[in-house]
Image 1: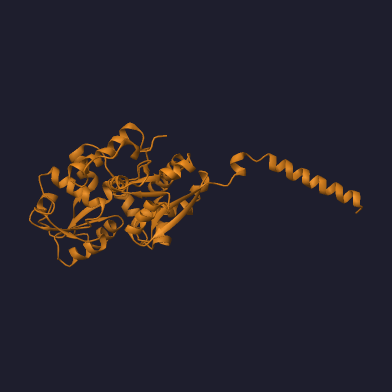
Image 2: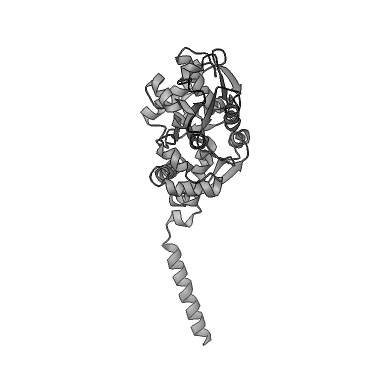
Amino acid sequence: MSKLSRRGVAAFIAALTFAAASTLSPAQAQQKPVIKVSSLTLPIFNPLVWNVMKAKGIDAKHGFELDIHAYPSISAFYAAFATGETDVLIGGPTIFQKLYQEGVPLRIIGTGFTLADLVIFAKDPAIKSFADLKGKQLAVDMGGSQFQVVKIYANAKGLDLGKDITVVNANFAVARAQLEAGRVDAALVIEPLASIIAKQNPDWKMIFNGAEGWKDITGTDGWEIVPAMRADAIAKNPNGPKMLLAALQDVADIMQKDSATADKIANETLKLPPGILTAAVESKRLTMIVKPAWEPATRKTITDMMERAVKAGFYEKMPDDKIIYAP
């Protein structure tokens, strides 16, 4: 090949490369924003949200890269978000209330799981309702938002959780073990442990369901976990909240409409027994509903939980309006 023809070919290739590059949109040419999320290594449904999102490529579909940071304990999980190591966390609304009042610049951006996955089991057939726990012992994790929900419910029913009902502080797994050993009369757990217990102990009775209890005292839905994003992360990626909510909605669709796929991911990533996630979804206990937090009706359901937490004595005052994200 002559020197001239080689130059001609090189020029032609360069022209093609330039033409191809010029057809890329700005969004394609730029690197996708990275959203760092707090997750857990524990076999609960919180990390499953992120595992499904990553496994199915939902983050890329909605224009961002999901960066999962997994922690072995709930305290480390929240601490990473509080210090800015991660940008996003899904957790209890009233726990976010506490973090916000401690100075963490967070914004609740939407809804997540309903309170239906919060249940109390009893072994004694004579204990048929929450009211029957008066004078008895309940094992519950006092550091979690679930304890706050149950205490608020108890107050509304004229019961003092701690006086009328003795509280034994225990995480979900220990609470289940305490009930199994007969050391307590009832235990509070969440999914997937609730579905595992129901399968292994069909004679145990569910005497309380968080969603039903909350609706009974408020007339509205309550939220077990909701997504929050740090304000500094939103400043760097203004489209982040809407991107994330769209991705979470896709995750919710998979969980509710294709639970077999979610079940497989739960088995592979969290080592949950096959069928447990499907059972939780079919029982209506695991219900993921994603709505923007800034919509008036949704904002009201979230702030109502916070108002009741103040009335119950968990916090001195309500947070300001900035705790709920507004586009």
